[in-house]
Length: 465
Figure 1 (cartoon, rainbow, N blue to C red):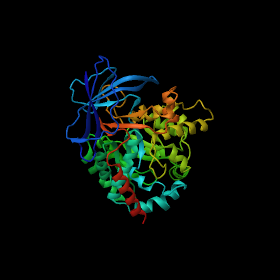
Figure 2: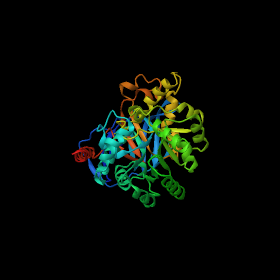
Figure 3: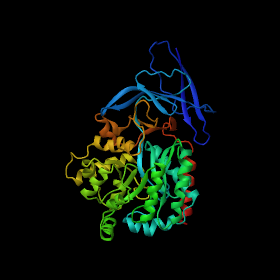
Figure 4: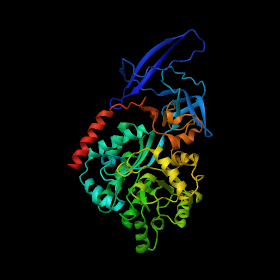
């Protein structure tokens, strides 16, 4: 009996697959397939496109428990079937050995400024407004499209390494962000930032949406920066554009006590109530931070079916406060997680975000029983799928966006509670990241990574010179 084992690495630069074939023979009618070689000596470029992919003998999570020995069949960018002993009937697909690995749906980072990975470590240990006014905004005045291109690619490297397959971004040069993201193979919701100090940006929103609407990976959105940086007229225009094209509105909301106190004094309303008066609270809204909310704000967000993106690590680092997640969730608000930019976090890991969110909320409500690992895992998975209207999950018909995690790591041993380990213990070990049925990282290798790191360092030095 003979088997042909393919080791496949996808080149993002060429669009080709690098593959090596090895043949193994056995007379055993029920053989155990050997592991493919980790680093084949000879690789050759093939322009073949694998419309089918079969992940063999992988573990999945079912009802919170580890279920081993499953196969995942992927066809044309979607999951076709999951179960034991599946076959690729075409004999022309891509085979991935999943033994010793856990397959999870790709994570969604609900709020980023991805190009700001270039500013990682540049302005630490400051409160939000001094951080923005004295450090970030002056440097951003010098930023170019080329800076954004390499900053986004650097951010994409990090997302891929953390098993994040989709992100929601707000920044300058959205077309450049979209192109760089597509080159890296990730899925994204992208909006160009809009605020009154650069009024020309509002006029660029609708042309950007028209250019990218209907793209396979990029979903355009509208990104008014915040209620305190956008006039009522700007916010109303943003709402009209979002309604006309049925796209999301991505906004910072009630991030600091000063923001909320300012609105209460000047308008007699909280920022949440103010946006509601303008018709912006609805299911298309991704309201980021939402730290300083009254109970009335929480129930208003729930009534309007708005989505909240909590960024615990960034909020703690900037001492902005702790969001009232218990009140939000009791009100039935859809809450998901984001990291914010790497200049205020300082990484893009949703695993770290999950752990710190859980332990922060436990202390805020003075009970270790609050915010269990299972609850926090839902924030990073099902709630995010709902917020961004994505058909995700390990089920037939879902997008083939997933990550394979190496379970042969000390932080997964002993294998007791897999969800607990993912939320509280995970310190690395994403082995493979797949988006739209295409492998972006295999065995921890991302093609072109060295060049991206080099170019990103060059762009940072240019910005700060």
